[in-house]
Length: 154
Image (tube, rainbow, N blue to C red):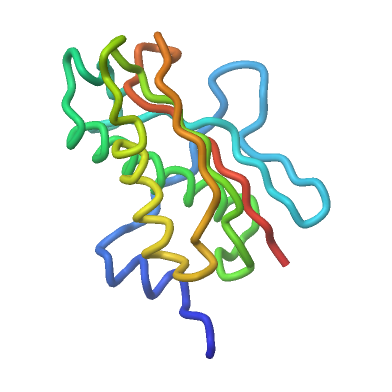
């Protein structure tokens, strides 16, 4: 069974990849060791600005899920900038999600589904990944969600 073209799938989903972001501190956006590409954590943005908020206090699960989906698009833009062709991705290995949460918020996994579902939609079987989702007290700049990604490429 032939794998689908990632860019055709993005177009079908109505997604246009933005320009890859630049690091906000002393790090790089992506690093590769062998066939493994590590993407730095990307924070949620809305209308070009940091998407600020705390899940369970100022934001609900659906808003957090939308924020995570927006991060997945930014992650794909960074991965595209790194590898040159997303069709070279053989596997999305893992996502790690940090959710800015109130003490009683327990739906970090549902928030993170916003990214996981999009990645699976775009890459199909190659997009099924391992994952961790954590609730944290704060994220840089007050962002509501931060996600990092590990991919395998050919």
